[in-house]
Length: 221
Image: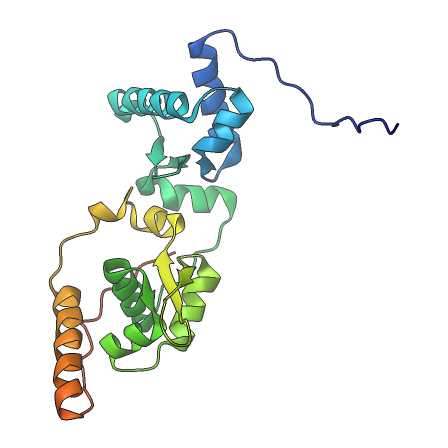
């Protein structure tokens, strides 16, 4: 009979108190420097995801109460959380660590990002229709930067890829969820106009010529 292979992964002892567990979460987030999923924290600490979220909310309240005492902040996203430095100290951090400035997104990339953010999930053909130009390069650029990702395929002929924004998008724009996106009528009006044009074209056979949306300002990555 073959012996079962033993796992080399260390077995972590459950922490004795909720306070220790909360401190462990803080330590993990501090060491990571990037978002950590709630389910990963729950797995490592041998607690439920609900308990993790509760402790994260408690940590957030503590950081908020002592906001003027810290140069870091706790960012919470739908499925993860992260400790990050405050934006106003970015120039000092770059200078101290010798970090070069990142490039800005081009106007075309910002247009594509705006269309996806307000109409996700979106196909590239939809993005092209809204903008009135080919968006291949901008879509690929945003994919490379991790600001958008493929989220599935449309149930239609050719099964075109659907794109949505990522958690990195939320971090870059300083929001926790898409619900915090600023209200705008430009893109929703453009989308409604596309649908109207489609209905008209089906009856007349004419091709639609949508107007491009206003260009959003550039943003530094």
